Length: 171
Image (cartoon, rainbow, N blue to C red; front, side, top):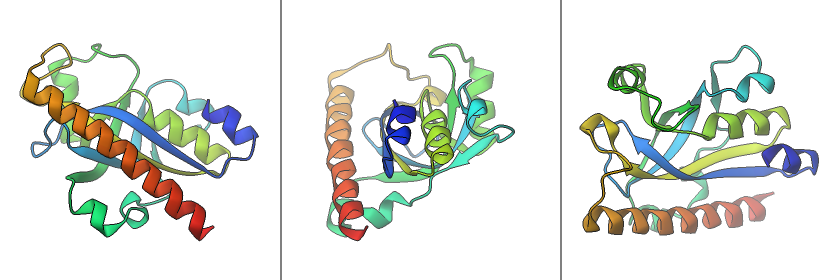
């Protein structure tokens, strides 16, 4: 989809969704913005050959109102983009964390790589669904976490819209 919008001349792409937290301080419902994404999936290589990481072109914190940031835990760092949900083992997860990744997902590196190829500004905002380093995963659920995830999803969308409004007013 990002490729199609790149061809159409779109100037900004915001990757939204959920991620697995790897950093100890992140919990379900917290927000995460990738400053860079490690290309562990298969699509990035076609848009950024030879690169193992693709960076965001914007710092999401500069595009969100300071008032909005007071009410949310927003973490930032490197995200590992993997190619298959549940394909990783405990050793993989620990290796990604020890390599400096604070989160894991399935999309950010590909989104950033395609956006970079087309010269689009790119940023991400995701909510933490779980923390697999703490043996939490998508198959485990409880009411409190479900509420945190729902709140994180809502805040993520509100902040993404803040970024769009601010970006449009500055360009």
